[in-house]
Length: 367
Image 1 (cartoon, rainbow, N blue to C red):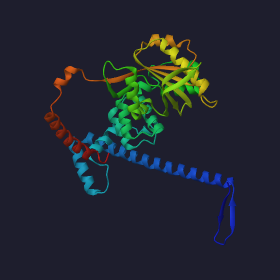
Image 2: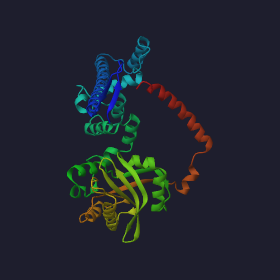
Image 3: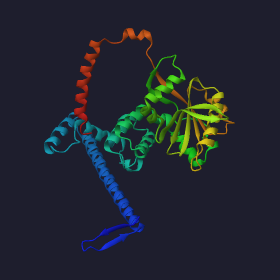
Image 4: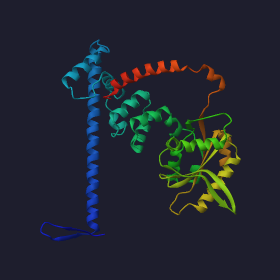
């Protein structure tokens, strides 16, 4: 569509699609420029914090001030720069830890420049100084998925690196059944085990109960599945030879550009599970998959799996399938209800906890 504007002297000028291209290019350059400027500002701030931490380390080596140094610095810096945050006792200690972890400021080569100071603090406090590979993995995921520092904390606490990184042992036939580019991404996306800690069910719960629980907590379920998953249908009907079959969960992954059939099994993995899942994948490929879609992938979730049996079950399967365990939070045994705290005890604990949270928040305002 041609754009027409009228100038101040009533002259009409038309702009064709080339104008739209020019406008788009200028917008893109402007966004890139702003992004680079933001990264540069962030980099300079982090470098400044490293320099402060390094100064503290060197001075502490000469003097025996101990932790009192942080109290004095926090107080004096606040008096000198009352409108500047970032110099609490807690954050000054973080700067010292940061400089100790990266003695030559290798941070610019080790982790993405886009990480904020708070991301760095979380990585410092949650991951050992020597485990740089793990920090690099989380650093890349922060940028890739735009994690906030709270999301980073949650993923570290959930052991995402151990469950999803390349080092994790995963039971799939993706390498044999998918193109190399899709294989690497599918393998990366898969977790083992999946943590469904948001579900609390009894020992006698059936697969249907787990299925309904996942749908009730669909937001948490999608977050646990990971980036790019969208729910396409539940108990999704597939008609084959005039017979109706139902898929537990039919997903679509926007990163893989493929359907993902998820089947949930209670108890141990059984070889016949892969036959059923392979049948569903064939049906989805025949009835739903478009030419631009990648091959449909199967994800079989069971409570327990013998990895060797699972690998044997996948050897002659035609479709790409991954087999993972899932972990649930079980409901409390009846005998534990007698040892639960009273209302008075809970109120007392909450009162103490509230005071701790208030004190902690005061210390973290400028982190």
